[in-house]
Amino acid sequence: MNDSLLKDSEKSAILSAINIKDYSGIISLLEKIKTSHADTAKTKDKKFVIKEIVKFIEQNPGKSGREFFESGNKLCNMKEDNAKEIGVSVIWRGFKYSPEKVKKQLLKIADDPNWEVREYAGTVFAEALKHNDCFYADILKWTKHPSENVRRAVVFSAIGLRNEKDIKKAFAIFKPMMHDDSRYVKKNLGPFILGSYFGNAFPEDVLNQLKKWSKIKDEHVRWNIIMSFNNSFGNKYPDEALEVIRMFLDDENKTVRRAVKSSLNHLSKRHPGKVKEFRNKHDLNVI
Image 1: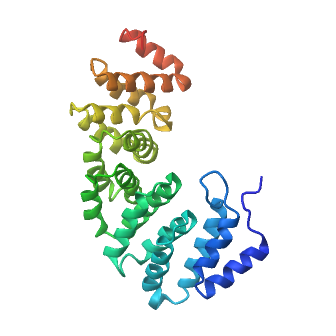
Image 2: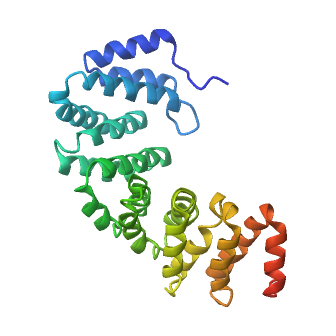
Image 3: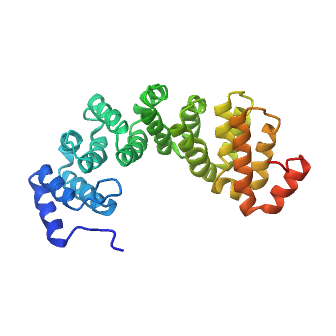
């Protein structure tokens, strides 16, 4: 199946439109080929547009910050979801030119009604944080933002800190969010970002941090800890996963117990012998 719906003639028209900053014309072309998946154009076609806009603006590096901001801002203010996704992917590159206005747009796009638009915002939060140290203070503040959509984007922002130098800063973002009771936030934090992204990249650091957090009695913290193994991280480190899960076997909270059951069931698919032995040892045949 073709992952692009743009014809060569349409790509040429887009390139011509970029040269004269006719962003409305570009979005009109994308609107004609949007799919029912998220009511937007295909990812490859949007990436083509983003890449060509960035390439065009970077031809004049002395003015690129302003151009990234102004072009991205114009796109972000359009009503079409194609425009918002492309706009947010452009505007973060102008962060240093107008940080307050860029942050305002990032917050708006992160709280968009369309789930796919919010996906783009999450990626951009990470990129903006990776390239702008001053953004970190805002990210920490937004861990308490009233919108769960924004808080979910904050979880994704930590990807911009996925390196040995910044991992403690990433943990500082996760710490307050481990208490978050939003299902939307939780399903992206423990099982996905904390486990799959950080656990697989820095297993020793993550395991040590999980053990420290295990002393916290909050049910959402414990859910995130247990569910961080409900993925490839748990599959790669089953002994370590079971060691951590063992800490919560006596927990009577239903949320925690459901997490234990879910992660054990996941681990049993790849490591049935280990999980069976674990269940027998701890008399968990009903779990």
